[in-house]
Image 1 (cartoon, rainbow over the protein chains, first blue to last red):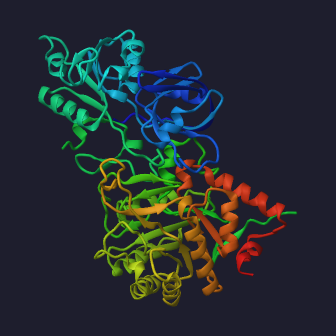
Image 2: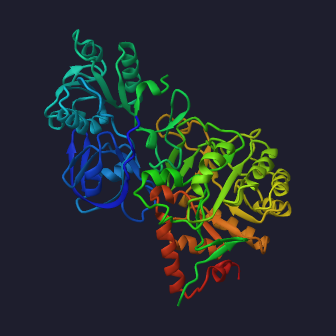
Image 3: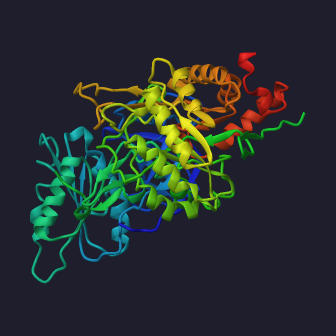
Length: 262
Length: 309
């Protein structure tokens, strides 16, 4: 991905809504600068504003959606940083640096297949909207562990969606990648689909394998522990085919062929 | 009362006492990512890029970071493109900064310190050199050179004979007697002591009970280590009277900076706080000025070492 970096701003943003969506919290805050610039697949460094030193650092949070002046993020409360963000009350202020990272490259043509595992669905809702606006056909494969985590119904209204759960409690039983080879086979004469994926490392590796096998392009959004989000600390690297790549400034979206997969 | 925030490190004049800790602020990357005019409102009074080594280093295996209680454990492993690439590609761009540039170097062998200092000597845009003898994340036969006074002395001597530039030596706190190491550095010709580098640490994943870092161990920074740093600054500046000290370790506020200066530092460095807020130093400087004014402390010179009097 080589989309030009968009200047990020640091803002204190009041929370205006915090609601349960599946197993996650959807937190909306006022951030006009970020809302105006954010592209699908970009992220922000977010923490509760104030002097508290624990949690110490902001957390990288995908831009889930924008709605005029509002920016939305989906929070999975798994550690102390995300627990704090998930607990943000209406009126609390967030310290937000963003938008950061490259985002997905939307310039390709042809149909798009979006593959998400769990929270990986968060950045893909905005992506689905942007691709539909560009007239691209969009199919989504959304994998979750179990019914209570599924996000699909209200977030992907216009796209063609297939939900999978590992325990079969909602949709089809299986993993997000299971139907992928079938979707890529396509019909003769049609442009091969392009894959956009976000989710756990094992899922992304499977997406990369299938994409290579089928000769299609896959853009994958990678998650990593981050300290700064702006290329200073070199803490968030992933192994590229030649060297380590910084997830924050060279990603978080990579062409699957540029990464080393185990 | 007018507060004078100016300070100096030998010939290097600083318009206020807050610089950055090496490896915690990439001015070139931040200039691209952040809103325009970063160089115009540059928050530090001098800039230290990430430590460079003679040859390029890929850095350590990820994960490289983990947040702890009020701290950050890291094991980056001095990832850098090597000093030749730094001099060719980065230095000309850094020369545009409105503040002096202090280049931090580390050796994979003792000789590297002399070689690196020699390569920088010809570049007038390098205001000073920091010898990082204290990175905990690169293996030099398993020991960072700054753990040993003799090897520290040797590395500093080699650099001293290769350069006439102001020479800062950055020390590790992971030693029995940091004053002994500082004295060895001073004896070998150091002009200034910078301390502290990170504190050795390790974190286990709460569920798997395995180390969270790819490199197993790392260095701890942030507010959690501030008392360790204050002690080191106090002891070293007291013992090496007259040699300026740059104090760092967990500074996030103007009050923290005030304490480091009172402990004996002539300047302070902000590190992990840059990850909380890339412009944190600007707030720290203005808070420091306000606190000095409130307390009737007219200058940094007057403040430095107050705790020792």
